[in-house]
Length: 472
Image (cartoon, rainbow, N blue to C red):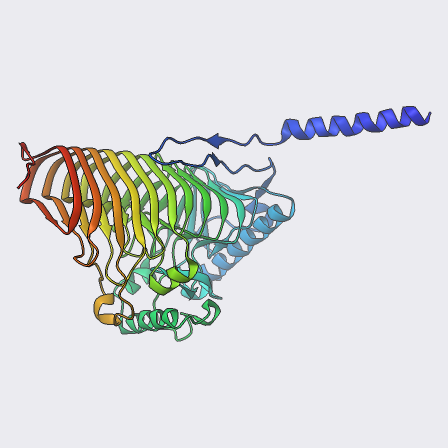
């Protein structure tokens, strides 16, 4: 009898393991070809458990007897409860059904997929008080406490936002903040000086006075591992649109991003490694795809480069640059590969590396190829004196030049450019090797080429205005 019981017990355990394995999600992996050794990426996966926000009190629509703020609070709490329940159950999908859902900040947790059903719009209220208390975030490469990003995750593992729905903030208040009043510049100056003095991030509260007007990110994932952003759309943003800060192993695919306000970069990868961006559409009021690694002292403290990034098969309709590297890049940039991208409309700068004498860091091993563009101001630009408002806002505390080397531009066609190639290295730290191969720019309006302080320019089959670029 004892042997029979043992056999039955083992049979039950074996059957349970079989069923568990049978229903466990199969992890998808992605192997990528690149000019450098790119790690295999594992796509985040989740148990097939659903947590509809309606089961936790969410109310659809834009009307409520007590006003927008009350409705946003109700739905913010519903999102929070659904996400918490999903996390505590071991993971799954927090489902946003079809309809319009007015809310405040959404904070993700580990092992949660926020699934935006087709026809679902998450409409974020533009009442700043809803985005308090302040959370650990950043502003243009400097860590601080600030208003919560509209969608936020901190130190999470295995997270996702998926589905055919839309993230759409109301913009009236944030647009009023685009103008950067005096209090905003004073706040920036204060934050910069705190970073120089190595003031702990927990003491850098940028909401304390009330006039800082430091707009929140639309979507920031901070110190997260295993990220999937897939298929959803974004319509407008208060600040940077998608920001991955100090993240590892991230995939963004099939996104449709439109944001035409001040500082509306499409996707910013900052001090982040092992990333794939593919099959996305960007239409931006600032740079489309941006590689960053922090500003000056904060970046030197964190000492984390952005590296191992592949961007492929995307369309960029409008933007300040297709691929922008910097200007916040003090932690270093290494192993970046963008290929097979279309720019059918207007881009100010197709390929733009920007830094200054305060940054330090390095930009190495960047390849930009198989690009087709219509109308640009600059096809390829390196500028080592980009400071924007910071030039006069704060002094130069440290002079540290950026090492730029092993930069390649290949198989690029541009219909029209004001200027084709504009490379301006720093005389104290000239740019190293730059490869330009099989580039055709049909028409140029302002000037064809300008190259200063580049130690090794290698070019082959570069045609501008129908003429081959020859040695001077």
